[in-house]
Image 1 (cartoon, helix red, strand yellow):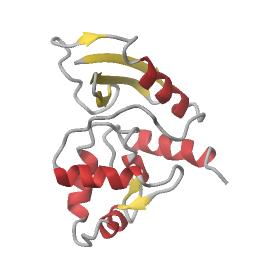
Image 2 (cartoon, rainbow, N blue to C red):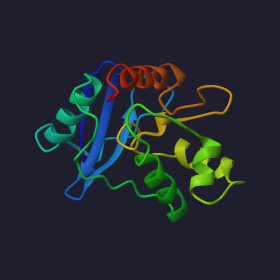
Image 3 (cartoon, one colour):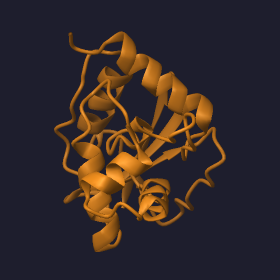
Length: 158
């Protein structure tokens, strides 16, 4: 696995991937435990495109990503992540709305668990999934979630 570290407005991000695409994104300044990279190779050049796309997104110059992603996960998780990726830039859905759109009205806990297990936050924009009564949790922390929502709100297409 190759990795790179990106300094960003939301803190240090560690991106990890291989020839197939990106597998992980970690917020290194947050509550998330960083991975053990001893067996990995730092390769900023190989991961230049994802770094550039993420930087452009975080600067408000990009709304979509073109990098290949390989999120792993169970079939149910991948189904939720695919639905999350269909939420338009600058918009949100509640966990309940997302469960309903997936045809599982009672599966709010499953949707919440899948978004919490998202290995590629920002790229799979689970920050766009909010609680019915507030912002909801986020792997990078609620402050970063709010920062990402604010960013998209400022640059939302009319």
